[in-house]
Image 1 (cartoon, one colour):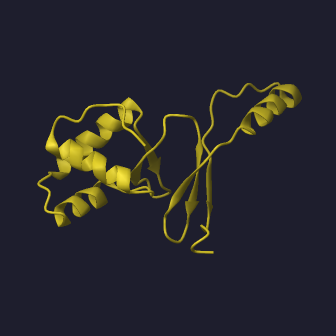
Image 2: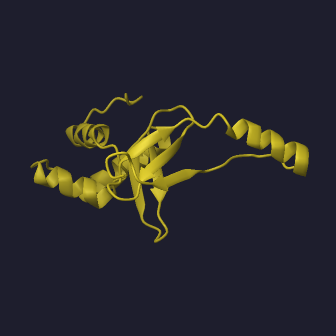
Image 3: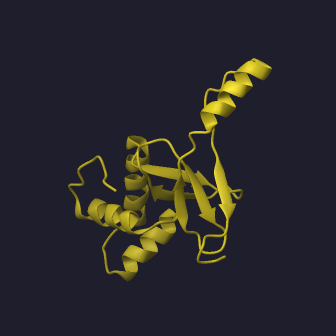
Length: 129
């Protein structure tokens, strides 16, 4: 996975590298704690600013849980969905080309034009069974 932006500051590089290693959604506080444990000198405010910058550029995906808390993950730029393990938090990308058939069905049967959609699949990964 590659980021589409240059990261000129060390804190931005450290945040981007951490996101490259993670295959799960992580909160800004978790990112900050992991960097702190690794002895990186990154302020929590820098983490938030960097995440907002990366989100605005389309390099990361933001997920808001049912409690309203945000978490972030580095994602490929192509359109896809996520299968999220409810036990370990691992995330797999899911290509959903079938959504076009669903959109066509909505138009044909209901006269409804789909402008967008959001979809997550939650269950257990192969390791967690």
